[in-house]
Structures are given as structure tokens and as C-alpha cells.
Amino acid sequence: MSFRSSWEHLLQACQAAAGTMEYCAAELEGTAEGKGLSRRLYQQAQDLREALSGMGRWQEELERWDGRLSQSFSIVRAQEEERRRLARDIHDGPAQLLANVVLRIDVSQKLLAIDPSRAVSEMEQLKQLLRHSLQDVRKIIFDLRPMALDDLGLLPALRSYLSTASQQHHWTFDMRVQGEERRFPPEMEVALFRIVQEALSNVAKHADAHHVSLTLRFGPQELELHLVDDGVGFDLKKAQGQGGFGLISMRERAELLGGQLQILTRPGEGTTVKAKVPYGKEKEGRPS
Image 1 (cartoon, rainbow, N blue to C red):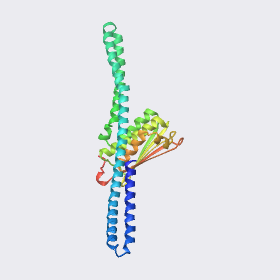
Image 2 (cartoon, one colour):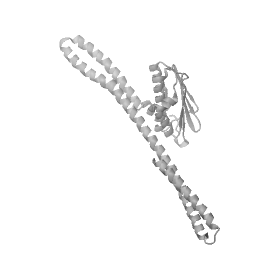
Image 3 (cartoon, rainbow, N blue to C red):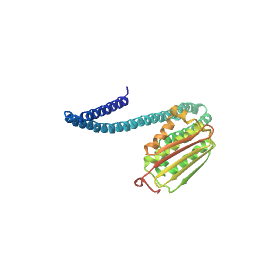
């Protein structure tokens, strides 16, 4: 039996005991010899119900901690999945290419002695390989922490990322901003950026989309974010049942900010990701 089931059975048993004590007290109250015992039973029943009230509060606190613990485990799983993806990208990209470069430098050194023109040609090819490797490294660095986010803020970083992703995957895109723009604390901007990044990653992998639209609405007390694609859509319940870390990560990032995330999609009808995140006046900042 689980801890929660045992706890609920204990509460039910205590409630039944309090009820029995009150019933017995009421029966004894009508007799001269039972009045003193009746008062004691009523008092004990009252004490028991007060204890039950405290136990109920403990149960609520335990459930809150259980929810936080489950959320923490999910976040850790999502983080480990992200680390594994980055490690695979480094291994399959820059690491493999640099190993190839080392071998070709050895070949070039030998060619210098016997065929200088071929050695020069080989060096030119190595320069191209290193340029591609540099692009891969910059992409990985961007995935780890986009510098534009720290230097310029959320909106320029999103605009740049959406433009780059659209060129890479041959989408058209538009980005609209409603309300008065503002800066947020770094942890909030990073979380919002990661939500959009993960959503766009899903579009690139699964949606077969032609157009992507991003809207940010700055309200008096919250930021609303809508990302819409015209792709093939998907079965949300099926995807959630398969435990996709991307969907979990987006939802939990929004919840950690005190907000909520909603995904609207059906096969053949595209996908809309909606996030609402509150902000207090003490956290607001103006763009510099």
C-alpha cells in the first residue's frame, strides 16, 4: 500500500472514531451516571477532530511537496535529455570534423615535400572544413546560451532566432509585438526564449510547415506568447502519452514562472502554442 493510501485510511479511521465517540457521548448524556463520561467523550472527540484538521493541513503540504518533487524529477529528465542531445551534436559534428582535420594536416605535411600544389589545394579544403566546424560550434554555443539574450534582450534574440530558423528550414515568418515592450529578469527571459526555441524545434522536426507566426502581447500584469504554424499538426494525447521531453520542458518552464502553457493541435490542422506568464511591477524593466 502506498504512503498516500495509508495516510487516507488513517484519516478515515480517525474520523470514524470521532464520530463513534460523539455518538456514545450523546447516548450517555441522557443518564445521570453517564454525564461525566459523556463530557469527557465529547472533549476527546473535539480534540481528535482538531488533530484531524491539523493532519489535513499536513496532507495538503505533503501533496504540494510531492508535486514539486515530481516536477523536479521531470525537469532533471528534460535537462539530461538536452545534455545528451548537445553531447551527440558535438560528437557527430565538431569532434568528428576536427579528428578529420588532424588526419588531413598530416597528409598535407607529407604533400609539401612531394607535391606542393596538392598540399595548397588540401589546405584550402581544410579551411572550408574549419569554417563549417566553426558554424557548428557557434550553433552549439547559441543553444547553450544565446548571447543576444544577455546583450539585447528577449525580443531581439527571438527575432534573430526566428529569422535564422526560417532561413534554415525554408519557412516564411512574421513576428508581432503588442503593448509596451519591456525587459524581464534574466531567468524569465531565458525560460521564455527556451519555450519558443523548443516549439520551433518541434516545428522543424515534425510539422512540415510553410509559415510560422510569433505574437507577444505585453499586458498590464502578464505576457502572452502565441506561436502558430501551418504544419501537419499531431495527436496531442498520443504525444503526451509517449512522454516527449520537449512538451514537458515547455510546460514546466511556464509553470516555474507562475504561468501556464497550452498546446492546441489536431492532425492536419497545424499547431498553436500559447503561454501566459505573469510579472509584477517590481520585476518590470524598460528597454534601454
